[in-house]
Image (cartoon, rainbow, N blue to C red; front, side):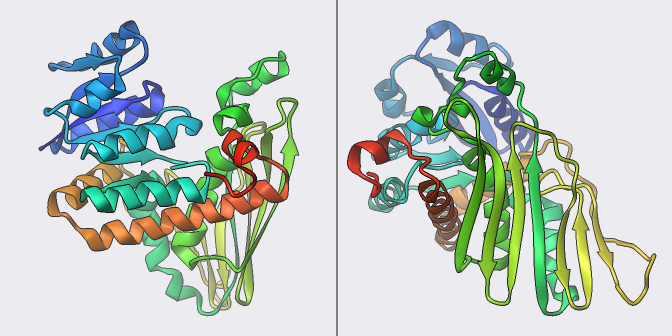
Length: 337
């Protein structure tokens, strides 16, 4: 069993902890927060002994913790992960892993040097029904295109409309719709089709200066993938992959409950391919991560490393083409650090 600590005490962390522990392979052992009261409040939700930390170095030095799950603000991911990796901890890093490709390169180099595992938490890529979608692409014949969407209204946009600047809409904290929800679209495209040849992003800029949403286009050999990512409106459009011999339709890019194959020669017929959806939507990811760590499956580590690299390359270009720069890029030039 992996004993793990967490950095970041928001809702996604609660989801990961409950999902991970439901596998019976993980045990929460430590909670870090800058405020002791916040750490204690988080730990109190779990019926077990949990040590609370207000010092990152103390958490890094803990012999009880082998793995750290990090879901702090995006701009802090690199520093927090570097501290834990240098201390010899395995790291599960919430998406987006880092603000720039250079930061990601640094983290993977440290992980290799220390002989530990670094994985980015793209939960949707580990879902059973996402795998059903991927495994049935050959039904479509030559591909003609795809649409992948994730548009979900954020309650924190209400704060933006009141003149406030919440972290998720703040470039200074590595925010914006592209790196929050758009990464689901980009990661899905890369996992399904590989690295695109060219990418474009057409953002809607909100009053904080960040992108509240936008349209993504990823060009492949012979076809294109288009998509919408937004935190300022709610979308209901399905996701579809088109081929000369059929279409696959799913009800979302994540938390997929339906995968339907449509044969153009049998109009009106629908073939449902989906399996029963997991109730805890991070459980499949957590189960795979503990397997990779316990088995030291370095081939899997390398495979997911390439997905992470591909995603940050795409989102970085999309942002920079639109002047959506994070502090590290403004300070060091567009090469980042």
